[in-house]
View 1: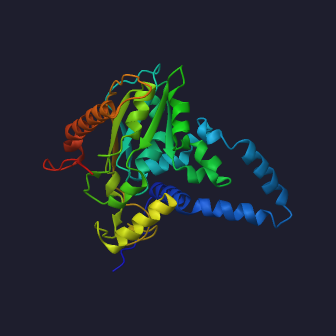
View 2: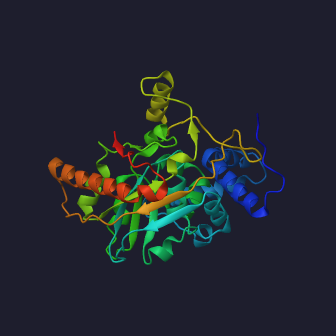
View 3: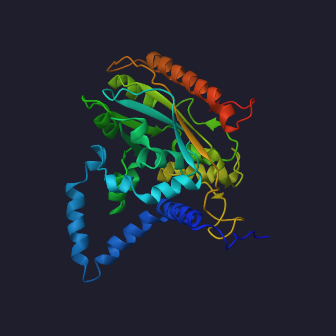
Amino acid sequence: MVEFAPLSIPLQRRLQTASVAQWVFSFLCLAQCCIAAFIALLFTRFWLLSVLYAAWWFLDREQPRRGGRKIHAMRNSVVWRYMKDYFPVTLVKTAELDPRQNYLVGFHPHGVLAVGAFINFCTEASGFSTLFPGITPHLMMLCLWFRVPFFRDYLMSGGLVNSDKESASYVLKKPEGGNMLAIIVGGAQEALDARPRSCTLLLKNRKGFVRLAIEHGTPLVPCFSFGENDLYDQVNNPKGSCLRWIQHRLQQIMGISLPLFHARGIFQYSFGLIPYRRPIYTVVGKPIPVQKKYRPSEEEVDEVHQKYLNELCKLFEEHKAKYNIPEDRHLEFI
């Protein structure tokens, strides 16, 4: 039985749903639409637009590796405030961050669409600049998406940058400080385990971000987004199943995972790709000091990695009761 939304819903809530719908569309389909538009323009009287853009694209090709190109009007758009209020999303600060330093933030969990990471680090909807004055956030995203015409500029406008070592180093080595680089450590593969009440993180053997922090002497900051995994249900895909094998193979080939997720629709609550209205609390922990060393040994990386895991567990345990996580539930690292 389909449960339809009542006709008497306030305009404010309708605008919230519309803002989330456009973002889901952007996440799933905008890149393909941009490619189609770029090619289609070549066969119209507006072909020069695509040619001029291609020239600009070539000249600007390294920008995603050089800190991106934020557009403050885009980050401050009212659309993101409506999207933030839909869930709602809350950014929680637990420690001061010195704007004279750079920071490397590990964001957990990925969830299905990484809503908390986007709202908190790519927009001003949750008040990032007010909570962390003097800090400029950057969020890493798969390099693949920065090869898409038009779409790449849309991504950079919010503060997204390439997810490669060159890009990360560019942000972290800035001597004046005041930069925060956020990495969704579990990545696309972790999205395959994103389902309500899940506390499983793909982190046990993910140590590249730790090595990066040591090489630059950059403090590590654990960040856990409570409620991130509760936004969607997902088709059951246990390890060893045929579906999980196909998803894993596609992730290896394309670099992106394809979780079969579902939640609600725009005008009904029974099925669709619009996430559930469930709160997200993104808690930013205290910095972990890291001693700079150009070529750290495996033992040194393991030591800092273990320290990071301990601090992340501590952050989770200290705040889980506030956000309705059962006392007997703990983080699981795989």
